[in-house]
Each structure stands twice: as C-alpha cells, then as structure tokens.
Image 1 (cartoon, rainbow, N blue to C red):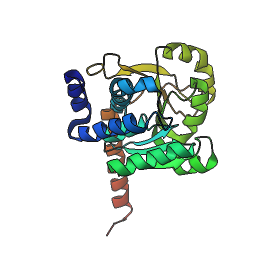
Image 2: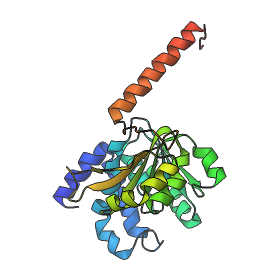
Image 3: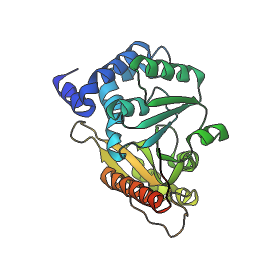
Length: 249
C-alpha cells in the first residue's frame, strides 16, 4: 500500500488492520478466478471496495444487528465486521460458490461476529432468520425500488436500509420515492461517508422502515442517539421488572 492508503487503513480498521490486509490478499489471490471481482478491480481493492465499504459503519449504532443482502465477495459486510467488531453481521448470498468463499473468509479471519446464510432476501426461510434487523446493507445489488422491496421487510420499525450507491443516487431517489413510500419506507436521503480517508467518499441512500407509508417523517438516528435510546429502553425494562417483583438469579 502507499503511505496515504496505509494511513487511511489504519484510521478505519485500527488494531484490526491486519485482518483487512489479509482480506485484500485473499481477494487479490482468488477474487478473479472465482468470479468475485473483475480483473480491473484488483488494483482498486482498497479504495473502491474495502475502505469504501468499511466507512459506512459510521451510519450504524453500537451493537447493531446488520444484514448484508447479496453479499457476493463480502462487500460491504466483511470490511464492516473487521472495522466494527461490535456489530452482529449476517451475510446473505444465494450463489453456492460465493457462499463457500464467504465461509472460507469468515473462518480464515476468525470473524466470530459474522454469520453466512445462503438464500435470497425475499425468501421466507431467510426472512424468518433475519427479521427485525437494525440495519440492512446492500452494494450494487439492484435499483432502489426493487432493493427496498427486498430489504425493508427485514428491518424492525425504525431500522434503516443503508444502500451503497454511486453518483446517480439522487436520480434514483427522485424516480423511486413513491415506490419506497408504498413499501413502508420513510423519505430516502443521501449521505456520504469517509471524506477524511477517501478521495471519493462513499455515497449511500438511507431509508428508515416506518409503520405506515403515510404521514410519517422520521429522521435517521445517529449512533449516539440510538445508543441513548437503547440505554433508556434497558433502564425502563429494569424498572418494570422491579415494579413487578421480577428478579433474575
């Protein structure tokens, strides 16, 4: 890596940067031959794929349960799991050869917070396993309306779809806004992440899962806000247990 890239990787992955380096090595050695990446992507793995994926962790609350739909080569799920070991990451992928790759990577890197499931997001068997997720991610999987149809049902109310998109994100939102609303999503909006470490920051579309497509306008909660909400919920649960004479022992 160049000095700038080394600094960026260290900033994003911290003391787990060696795991990111090993992941890049695995993709470099096997990615093309196993149909995971194109030949031109080998020299762009760090900036275009690995760092690009990892920085979206800034959109996720501490301890979030994250489902990566159509994980493919493990993007963004594997870099997220390396950068944020507090996350519970579930990689959903329908193709057997890619599932085999993901299993190998998880075992090689000893990523205990990662689970690999074979299937499609719209299948009942998958939905029953991942229902109620805090976050669903997807990268280069499908247009926004179709993606929302697959991913929003996997989220709990208030959970968020984090869709990694390119420069046309705004156009997709304009085109698919009404379809997203019909599917139970809040107003989509664009955010960018990684400006401090990437020459081209990662563009994402954020869509919150709401109860109703009508009359709801909820803003995306930050990591700090979500953490405070979880702490408040835990305190309320403990208080209710004391009031009801419920004790754990």
